[in-house]
Image (tube, rainbow, N blue to C red; front, side, top):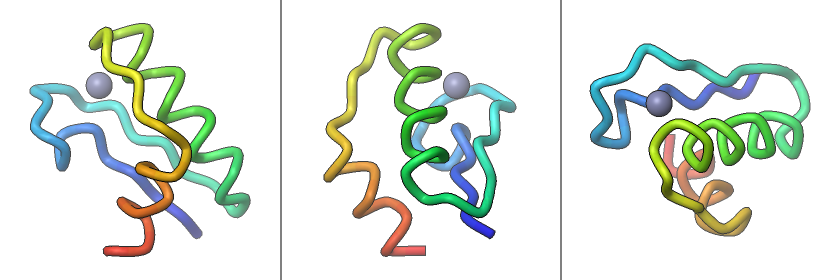
Length: 53
Ligand SMILES: [Zn+2]
């Protein structure tokens, strides 16, 4: 299970992207940060977030 918590990246936000498929989680989280916070992370950057957990 892969999990990215929005609040872990400095946002006051309860959004959590999770799933078995890393690229799906990255896509969900990336779409959320762009739509809700106006920040676009690269897929490589988000991959680093996951690998560092
Ligand atoms: Zn958020």
